Image 1 (cartoon, helix red, strand yellow):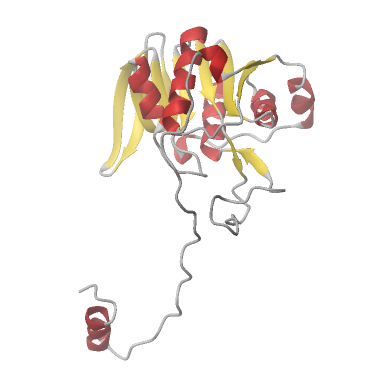
Image 2 (spheres, helix red, strand yellow):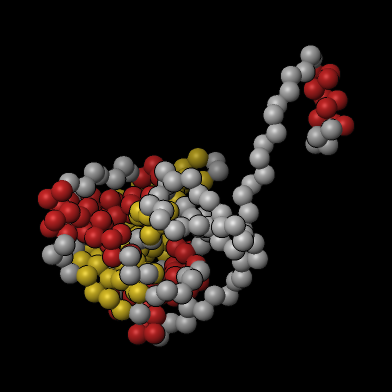
Length: 249
């Protein structure tokens, strides 16, 4: 069984994000980049499924600039078998990403497509659902547990009321949540070995996909700074301030 895992290169989660002076975008110049944490969980889950003998091959794919090779090498060091980079300098929005992943899936014919539930840069939480619709496959989103068999996959997912388990016929799309697993620490020998694993390159044009942006960002701004809190003498004064000043009552 083949598993296809999508990974994204994002600003490292430890970095304090800054907005460009002209308000057009986030400033990523000389900023540490790393694999999206949710995608790291997706790779780890695929590796665990392979170690359990349920998956025979793991293919990781990333979409974006040449530097995404570093992200793919990290995934290979974690245990993936080979990688594909869809290289482009264009701004990739969720629908374009979903179309590119569909094209890769049509070519690779995986039985399981695993992606992070969202990326920490745009927090869109759309790609998994969109690629599921484009492929016509079942989807198990926000997975906190995955139980894979030869023909089906049981996905325990987190919902407002608690946990829900869905059974999907393969092929299927699974999006990973934070509580699914804890990614392993990549050791130096694995990093060196990853350099010898195959990494193929293609482009949106080769895949026949139009990635032109459909949405336009008008302005990027930092959230307003929080004002200092105040103390009140009693509950009556609190209610009065909430009603007359905060206007929330």
